[in-house]
Image (cartoon, rainbow, N blue to C red; front, side, top):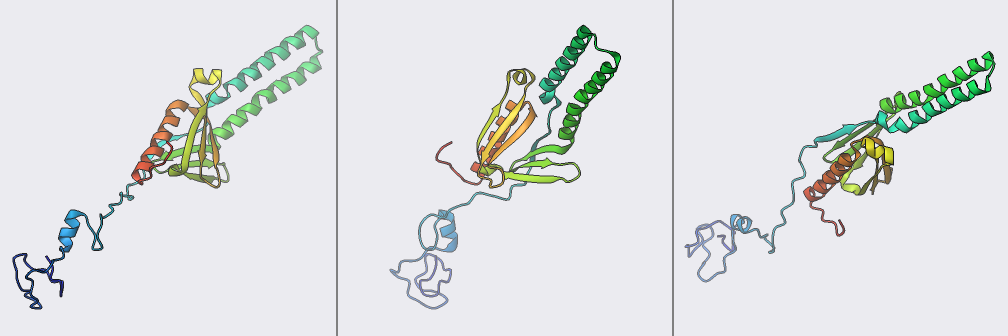
Length: 216
């Protein structure tokens, strides 16, 4: 316990303070700092608030990019257009010079989506950690955006009929981020698992920081 006059640490059975000589008989002794800490009380009274640890290392959970399967519908359309135009040209018996133009058109028709796919594969990168979602885009000039997972409040994903068969889709993230409040991750493989992992990380970070939302 402590002396009420000089606050020196003294034995509980003492009748006089060995430091200042104060009479301790019948005095209400203040609990020591160790006793307050043991019982979880502060000097002013009341319970001590124990905060959660916030120095947990940031760990990578998932990374991905634009899936080639996301353009399967485009490739199918190009194939149909190529075959259909070839059949039409044969039925109409086009002269030889028109066939040359038709072949050039076919080459352009196939090169354009191939370049689009190559760009998306090289320029788009997604990386999820236990605390943030990173979106990197660009080839010559790389730009990296970050969204705190604690700011995410709605995660959904969309799939068409073909996309459901292939397991790909688009994830939509609504957050409090000022730059990207409505963010889309397109062409994601195993989209259901990735969306579930995003939601799991979001909830874990909320619990880790001690944030309990009213609506979850």
